[in-house]
Image (cartoon, helix red, strand yellow):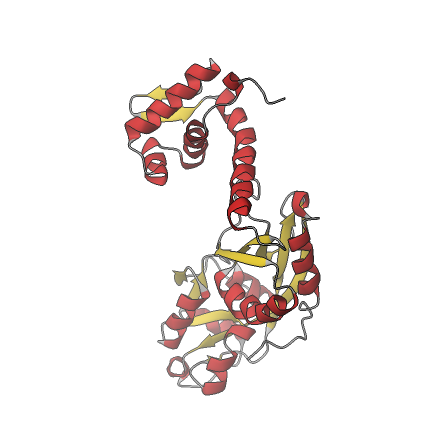
Length: 303
């Protein structure tokens, strides 16, 4: 039996509460939900009236959740995610199922996508929807069945499959090294370094593996994706620490040169990660089993 109506608030009110908890301001909630701030406030008041509990602290123009509301929304969020996932499948579910996959933009495009035609040939009944994500997220808060993840397999309540270890190599435009490659790794401390947001400690880890003591915080410019940091290196703005598979063509054509010839393996690796609650999903199982055959480090990238 479904619970009495008074225990089933409207989806609109629950979305407003969940968004306020996640975004922290009524203006941000209004923008996300395409509502006015007064409409957001009305939705929250309707929810409070229906539940008979104070859910919102109102400090002048600022809204925040009470402790009771925070506990409530942590459970409601999972239910909203399940409803969204079920609704998506209802609309687009093919015969063999759908897999909603979060991917890292560069690795997803360069490593996974070239391999997907084989999966499509073997399993034409399965549809894979892909969305790029640069930062870690909570499976309970977003409707993904699995994700490509770089780092350590440390997501809570999840399973994982190792896809590829990564080796990095410092590269730059040839004009930046007119006197030739430096004889020791420590000499790179005198060159402009390019950093990537998703791996802020990459250079420090590299210098440590090379036996170089870093005197303090490393200076340099920051970039959000490998595509942008590659362009910065190509235009001579500094030295970038890049996964070797991403710069093979630029090294072969001479557009970039390796500052040090020996690649170094990073501490992280690429994984397929999935919530344990989805582990037995047929589409995910087929994709995971196929991907396991693609996950040998020796497997060359398709050209």
